[in-house]
Image (cartoon, rainbow, N blue to C red; front, side, top):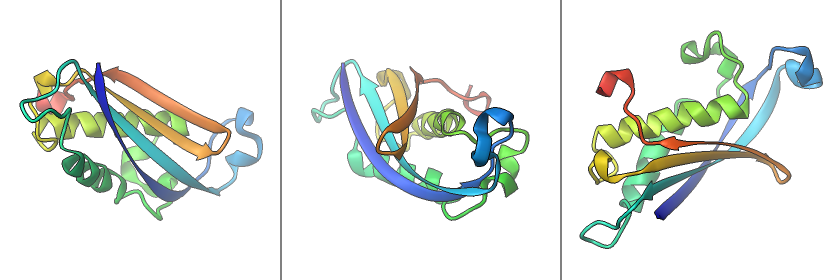
Length: 139
């Protein structure tokens, strides 16, 4: 299995609901280092998994509306605890959507899976990994 991994980061504010979060239940900042790996069983005719430039552009488009925002105020996150675990799955689905919109430069059926990892500090990170799937909008 081949993979290409790209990364970027965002700076956001949020608060987490639940006793388990202790002081993080208060509004606080987070610099999230986002890593996206896209997998394929085979390389394409150019000898690549995907076009890295396209992937970097897609990730930038996904993260830009979140950067320097309070996630608690964004309508797409209402009713969700914006943990890094949750954000991984959110970004995963946006990457899958981009693949189905042909923004990665390869047919979606040729891609196997996507893994999103968010590092919130040097000793803690969360990931979400699943087969490439279309959201309801692309089925």
